[in-house]
Amino acid sequence: MQETTTSSAASTMLDPPIDAFKGAMRRFASGVGVITAGQGEDRRGLTATAISSVTMDPPTILVCVNKNGEAHQAIEKDGAFCVNILASEGEGAALDFAGQTGRAGADRFAAFSWSQLTTGSPALDGALANIDCEITERVETASHTVFFGRVLDVRLSDGAPLVHFDRKFVKLEN
Image 1 (cartoon, rainbow, N blue to C red):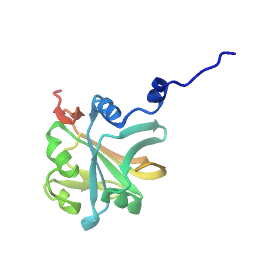
Image 2 (tube, rainbow, N blue to C red):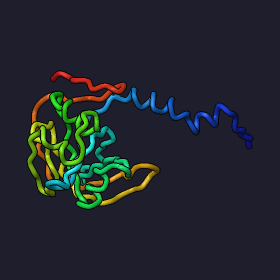
Image 3 (cartoon, rainbow, N blue to C red):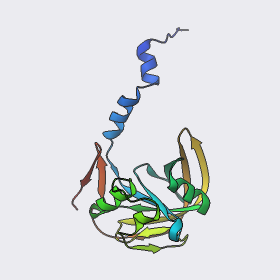
Image 4 (cartoon, rainbow, N blue to C red):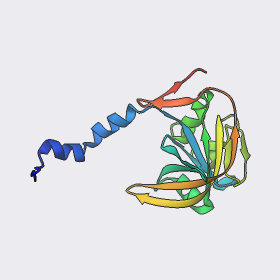
């Protein structure tokens, strides 16, 4: 039997410095979504890249949402959310819902056109896709909740995606 020892290098590998981890994640290009929930003046949303499909049967998606945000409260209250996958023309929505324009709360919705699908969560008109979900499970981890949503409705549009890479939005061509 071989004995293993833990060196400082191994510790660093297991517990990477936060800045290095942030740098690594900046190098992971990903699509951009606006996650929305609520109706009327209770509507809230956030820009997110932590979105992933989980299973196709039943169709399930996950989103990671900061517990301190208003959108988290709206998602919890409604038990539903809509993932709006942004087209390349969606940078304005991405900036608004990331809190970069000074708008807050339901005011973030004013500059854009919205519809409702099955759950009633706001579905952004002109998004590449709207994925309307009811929450089936929650997992709390540190500062975030991972919400698992069963897909109830989907609306698709044509176009090129908006991508986030190295702290910038990048517009791809079809």
